[in-house]
Length: 435
Image: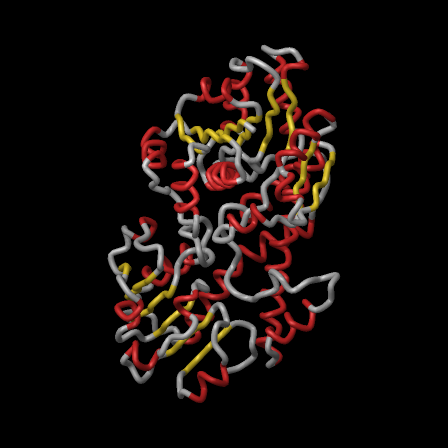
């Protein structure tokens, strides 16, 4: 099939590349000419394991191309995916849909034959209705179908999530579109993915409800971890005991820092905004947002307590600063709150992340990027394991740090407290009840 992906951000690029790998002809379009030129030369603008190999292979096989000519790309394609950003509005909580509606206006001028127009971007309920209205200003209704087909890709696991999805949600009452899309996704359905056809509005809400629920699970176990610390209980036992109940499940029940990234923070706010528009109170999700906001402050207080409130001139090392492993995404990472705050209090902060230097910290004079783990940890007073990269899971801290009074604060519970005690290391973790 001939596909056009509008937007080469995380969703558009990964989805487009994976569709081409399934044998489709895919054009990925972006108005950023520098990005398009890089992609044409196999240079990937995002960190996603395995993506560069897929890009090069499908360019070579002439199934994948990149362009900044939107009008021409639309005319050459049968199915158009809208994959542009829907960030939170500045100074508000609702989704900023300017890019979505801008694309819809461009599409309305370029429909040369019947097209299936799909919102892959995460959009609030009724966005598809608005796109349809825009298209109808210059086109008859038999010229297009507007469909919602939300993505469920995890950063760092996106290729696997595309190839082996739990479910494929297609929101459309149009029989023709539904038949074509079921055919498009047939290689994934054959591998066991469930194909679910719903109304367009239902598909839009499924995405938001899913992310809000996952954010709730993370926040819930973080609050239980707070109780575990007060009652001398290991939160890992709680997670295992709860997770074995199939109604609950074990995923997203790992205590740690606040959730971050490109989805949960903006999507929880956006679903609240939608509920307010329809005069509905989503009190649980409101509580989740507040609790997550408080999480970084709580962990900062824990750091202050570990150092007996003596922060000035202390060498504090962060292992990982991205919001999760296997991504270079810094959006809403709790390190963005912690590192500047520790810097303001006079700490000498150094960080190492496998994805390298971060612009977000460049204006803090006592914060530096270390080139290696050993360089980051040398002579450190406090080591904070912030992100659960595999690189950090089996370190010899005594050899690396060269400081007998080293303290380790493991925010991801990567190590066994008992093993660390055996090694005579001063060790703190999250929600384990060990002093």
